[in-house]
Length: 159
Image (cartoon, rainbow, N blue to C red; front, side):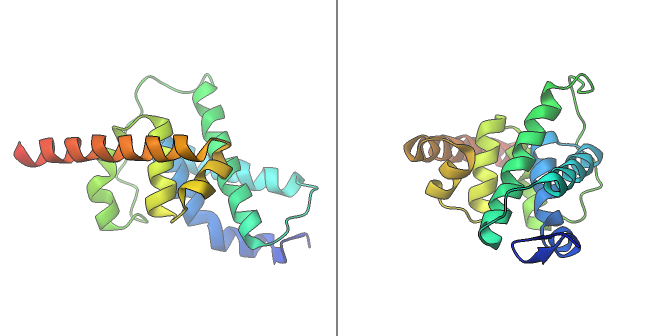
């Protein structure tokens, strides 16, 4: 049985599937597409020849590949102009669901950064490394996204 960072594939799937599906749902706004993307991520993992130094390296790799597969999804011909947010997201905490619609109003690059920072707990330096961007750029985008979310949430509470 193939192992990655000391974990077998079944352990990896059990440990990381929820995180990867949440990332893909945040990006695609579609549960079935998110599940397909995560399946593609695991297929890519199975083809991976390069060893992982440790479990954090594996997790970062899985997250990065998930974001890349989401980008590929938007480039594909099967994407429609509008994609509905489904009610099939029971795995997402109620608190998270309350701001999910507002987070979806952010542009995809901001959404990625907000998700990684607030939902996965990554620092701006770690996000910069994951996305191959400058740390200052990540900090700026995170600040702008916070301001946008604040405005969106304030507008929603006055309606």
